[in-house]
Length: 354
Image 1 (spheres, rainbow, N blue to C red):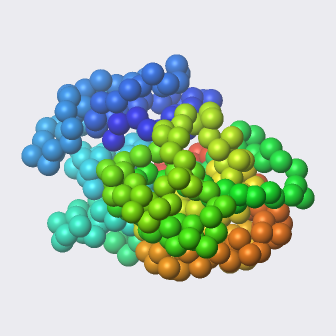
Image 2: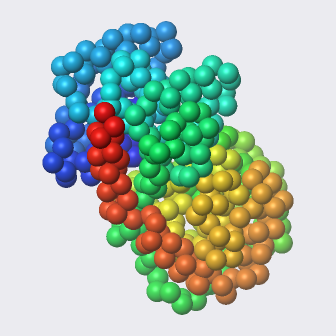
Image 3: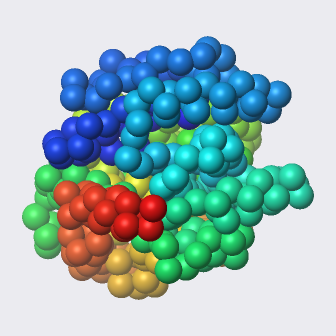
């Protein structure tokens, strides 16, 4: 909707192709890192935050831009906002991209959101997403399965890579790491509840919680009341360029998210050769195999997560092998340089359907 790190990743890659790219935002954001080859289109649609009552105005504004620019393809998403506006212009060919949460969470808000999702997908020319679970959802809501491509967005595996050699000895204390936002959907409160259980019997264990969010007070309260807050570090928000150091300082990456597509932070951790302990939601199960490159725990179950952390502590001698397996999976499936090419294939297939 604004300008996220994901937008920057896609636009930076597209800027290296022969295509002329116009970038249209629904909500204004800081575009300081916009690649020079990308043309930012200013329009009335980004004058304020998204409002449903403004959808007719958005549609007229986007239709005017389409008439002016005459694009070959309109690449848009999320489904229920920008996707809806794009469909209402009646422009074809239309490449719809799921951002994960539009199909894993937003579609379940109410009947109106379900209707919009189906309305948009049935009128989209082609569909791309980063996980098989979101592709399956799109098909459920009306997308033609023949006109879909799944590709994990991937990460820069040169940037996110191990710094310690495989076979390095792990030393106490065990370092757990999580950089999910402190919002309800990401379940960091579940991790906090699990950690206080572990901290009682394993006082040498440490937890590094990056970021922040609306659940900050509640999370700190859980840790303070149970006497575990001194075993937790709170570095705050870390620039993308500095993240590999935090991954590589950790022994285990934890993601307690309740909803996700192919998580970029999970792929970053795997790229750094970090064993991953994650909730057993469908998208995570596409990446993590129990005991091979990480472990799974029952989503939302703090007791189950605590037991898995204790299992990891008791089997610490396996972490090197499991971390090496995580890196191999990342090299095979999470390489952004390789995966990006599937977007260009999606463009070609979309054009052929016009």
